[in-house]
Image (cartoon, rainbow, N blue to C red; front, side, top):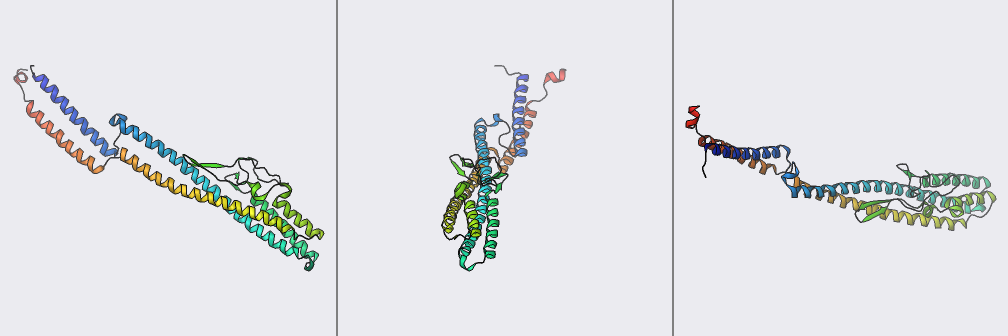
Length: 291
């Protein structure tokens, strides 16, 4: 095969262009600190990167769910704590009112008025909201769990949040299980105590009903606390997974700055050497002088 001057020049140009292209890639990589600027740089790495980023987006959604769920259950915990305190006050006043022989009508009326105030506070607590949603009415959109006439508006379905690919956690509490409904609700029991005080009826037997509601409230509070603890553990797991996924993404996409700078310097030396060698090989020929 005959090698002409034109062949030598074209081969040298191709080699120089290839060396310059590699130099440009390394310069771009050093500037952006990205291993993959376009899918063609690393097709397998691009595929792995897309999978990791999809997992990160999913994990971020779980993190938002956990934050929202923790907010719901914090509101539930606060409301149930308030309701427990109110119920203890109601019980103490009922015990006091049960000593009817030593109380004057004015004292009984004072207890009745105070019980009415506690009942209203308890009703307000039962209608506690979080981000505009009632925490004791499930998925109901009525705005309140209990109407002024004590009608319960809760739907049967609870509010749940998905905390990982396989787990959902309920973040509300069924108001009917906490406060009861209808004639057996805690509100009705307090109203009955108030009526008995004003009519002179012994309210001692009402303590059993109050204790039943108080025990139900404490049971629901404990269950909500267990779910809150589950949410907090899931948050820790989510944060650990977030760190693990970020490490995977960085390993696939981010360059080692020291390594890429070293490669860049080596490629610069290679390119400069190629230029020097090409300049010596492509010396002027007789044809150049004849022109």
